[in-house]
Image (cartoon, rainbow, N blue to C red):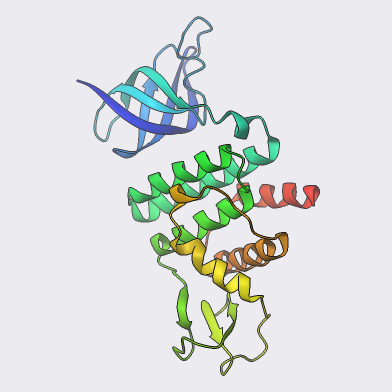
Length: 245
């Protein structure tokens, strides 16, 4: 029976001379493999519709735990602004690779909604670094390494918070502070906001470069310290950012 699924193509592999197999991260079934017969042929209308990072409604003959068969695709969003910018493409590659790893860890379908929501905001030309950091924060609980952002991680004190420490995983109050790197009060407040804000509700982003860089530095350290994820796309993105800076 023909089934409609919403999703994003996350990879494609040639199959024979004229066909290909695509993996789609779907809203309904998670990551599924789909056979696209004749999609490599120049005359096939599926040729342009089965490329990596195609987001749309896929009409498939769904087979659980087997390769499904593609019949057609309706594009939902071309993400044209992202795909026309080499830096944003780097963000897209990283966000997608990270999302796949997070989903494989927990298989929670909330991950799909977060992923697509961030890409839509990024395509609207909102700050890609801040959006990526927000997504990274929201993915931490799915990886089992959430942060303590309601009180001091050492003593539980909810007042006099002076900094945040990636090694111990949360806020540090004045009484527990030793030699941790101090960050601004805005950084402390906004990092907590990153965890709780609804991505769909974001209409504009106004955060200073200094605060954004402080938060990004912390999140990078925390991911390196606790997640065990070492993604080639992240390394490439960091290289791109160093060139831009």
